[in-house]
Image 1 (cartoon, rainbow, N blue to C red):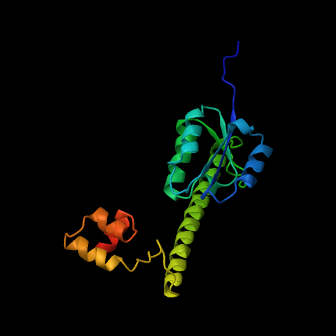
Image 2: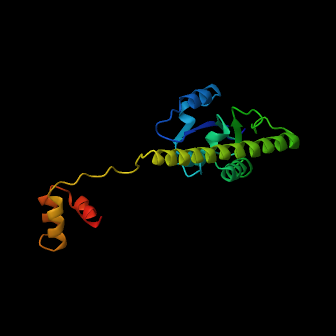
Image 3: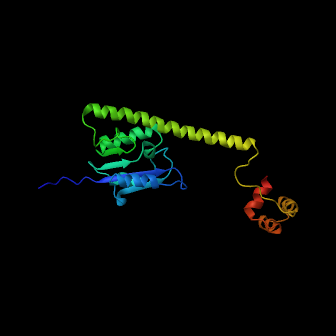
Length: 200
């Protein structure tokens, strides 16, 4: 009687923001034979592996199972984190890993030391590229914000236009002739807004 547990195939998809679309990854995972019930997806940054769907998936994985991702940057964006997570899954949990966009990163097909060695080199390179891209995106964001500020674009909450009654209400409040609540009501502002405006 064969008691060997059945090998299951899982898929993982990730985008960085809620506005981005998972469709291309989901189509690729289904085409690779991953059933919908075994696909886990996050809309989170790839800077680390502290993602809810990823954590649920990892708890499901058993030795011999196959985990499929479309590309290494969907797996993660941090060089060190990718290497550590890959090593832990493949060596400690004995899970097979497949990266669809990079056939060399397929531990189900790796045979012998040379194949493993090549896969490890490719992983190192792609992980480095993934992190480099993340850093470049952050740099472009910083440059964009700096350029926008130079053009006079303001970030954060827009300034609240204070009513004409504010000045008198502020003086009354600061001179303790009116309570915070009474002074805020007299000029039609919420107490927190009135208080913050008084501090400014």
